[in-house]
Image (tube, rainbow, N blue to C red; front, top):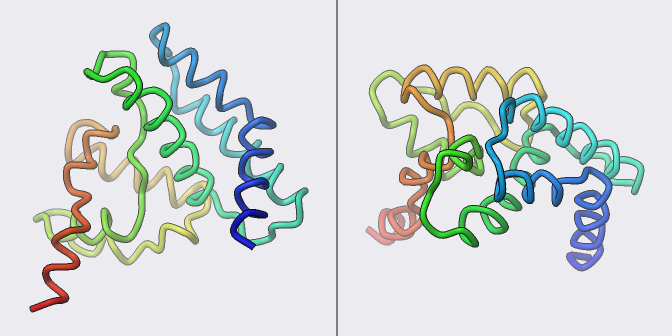
Length: 154
């Protein structure tokens, strides 16, 4: 079953042209990343739904984009450059839980990332961007799954 999802996601990535976005981010400054993100997320959703996957939210599409760009641009290029500071962090429960412990962000983890629609996702982006003065992959410093395991073991 998992292999089927991998093939679905691979097809959707091809259809949505995220690979071309990654190449742009590796080679030039992208002026309006958020607009491109919206286009690619909607293409991803469309492709996955056409493949028969019904539970495809904007939050899930955004995470696919974030992980793809993280692995193909950020990790591949090593040191951060200005043109990759626009890449969104992968939003998930661990990140939202950690961020909700920060004063001013209490309750942010009530958003279930797998259920975020387009408007909910962009409201979250706006809130985090206002709080941190940026919204990009650097927020992953708060994504600490090891603490989750340690806390459960206590």
